[in-house]
Length: 296
Image (cartoon, rainbow, N blue to C red):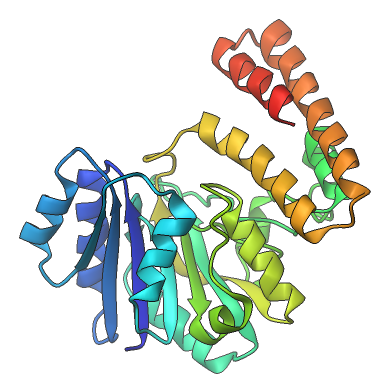
């Protein structure tokens, strides 16, 4: 088996059917298997998958186990040389998987790769950034890396400079929305960290891969459309990222860096409380960052 695609599903019935249709309609002769891990959906997703795509291996959980643990369930029963973590709210563009696997076959030093992500309107969607360190977290929290004369040159944790996603190059981390991992890499560094329920598990595994001298590469010739926030929310993403960063620093960084990270996150949350509470009058974002301030 060349490629195993793992899709974690949670109440995204129509989206996952469209996603599966795009996979089987565009992969041609690529030898692959698709494994769906359903995290206790209540929208009849498992029944619809069985009826429409009987070739899919389906794992049904009785609770929502989270993104990392559910993906690990799929990885453990997979047999491909490569494993692709794919969100249910994605559409695979024609030939995307073939050319991405060909690239990995010819670049054995690359342990993790991802396609270019597109918004539904066809525009480029940001996909990852550089590994977190105090300098780029502080710049992110203070909006410094958004300044026009800094943005193209700064190694941002959350890269937003869109031309940076138009060429093939090494990155610090890439989104788990469409992420291909070499099986040999996973055998060396381990599976996703299940201590992270959702969000930042992609950052953490890319961190471990690079510590073991594997390259993490963005490969824009392959393209995948990603809707975003279909089984989660912007609130969960923001809060999950705050918690995930704290965990990553606690696990991988010197002990003295964690208090400085927490101070930076609190400073960023306070700044956003002022912006969304006083200037923009956005009650929803204000409430999110009020919670983030407590979590930081």
